[in-house]
Image: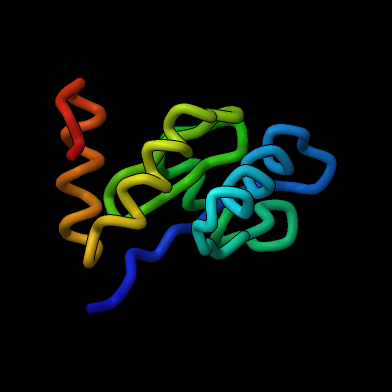
Length: 103
């Protein structure tokens, strides 16, 4: 199965963006980084999702952001390491966001 794809949208000189990527690195979660200042499509994606600030983290249809979100990053890492594919990741993320046990 294909591992879930995670994208971090950010910009230079953004402390929350640096903290987010550093935390994902420490948690062993692979991701793609897109700079909204040099990538118009990335900028448009962030706006389309309803955010006015970065970082924004996207995993399938699940997204969170607007700042450094340590609890969500830890949950994403936990789920990422146990989810065999994006569908399982999305189900677990939905449970987490609804306040249910993600395990």
